[in-house]
Length: 426
Image 1 (spheres, rainbow, N blue to C red):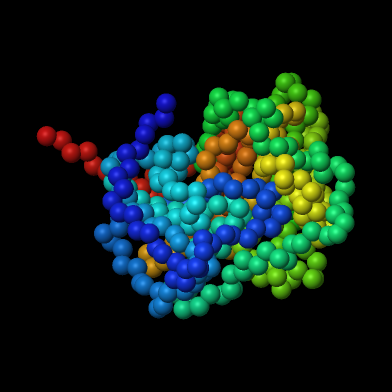
Image 2: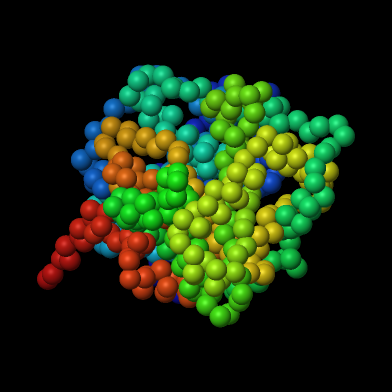
């Protein structure tokens, strides 16, 4: 069992809707929202200063970022823990989350640490926001605090993704999704056996890997990190299997056609597609990083088009009545797989008057999916480094942490600037 961090809830404040409807409100969702479905997600930021040193400014007026009919909750808590193991998600981010009702669309949580600093969590449902929306939400509030206006007006208009009549999609889409039900998933102990770690990749290592992963065109940070992770996965797989896979969640906002340009400005809902590639283990080991980067680029470009997203809308229209679906590649059957979600390109501004956080990462509760998952986010300090939240098998964690190049380094309290609180002696 993991050591528990004692959390004492000091205050809960229900922030009522400023313009409540006459009947209970219901959120309108699109078929793209239903691909992920309803489960709670959070964006957690860690700040190094004790709360008693904070003198944040107040917004000049109360803006309406979410619809005015929404009710949210603000929770304040504290922990007596003198040291937090930030490298282990189960000993840090997982335990500083304060449960909230599934019917609440927004929960803002603040937890003060005895070792100095505090966390701020913006929590909601994946049915309402994807990763881009999750980061846009607090970033927009930070913008408002400093400028008195939103740099980009938020949009909740789901009618932009309307199924075609008749629906049009490739029959192969059926194989891309699996019903999220017990008999199609690994058992709960299998899911619990995966570790959850937080790593940091220094800016110098990012640049070095990009150089090695580049061909005639410079590899992106996502392409370079994917190529490197593919080699680590191949090493961990060894002779246990002949192939291994990488999968990617692809944000469609900048990849849709011109008819969606205006609608995508400030859009908070889900605009995500999946793609993956399966390759021979010996080939990944033998080839250069540029080879893996090229495969990554090709895989993403295959689904980075308007037609792909319109097919997803159409497919879900005909299958949503069956229940909740999940991507087949993430279930954990077949070749060993890492599913990569990149938030590197998203703008992160989370200074609310007391400086930028030292770390920001999305968080969600463990699921019964058996593939590894890696989420990559830029450092909010803007120093070029990356944070990586990983859910992975112990064998892969061992390979990563014994890698001679030490590209993925476990995060520690000290590396985030925290000093252990002094122990009182009688």
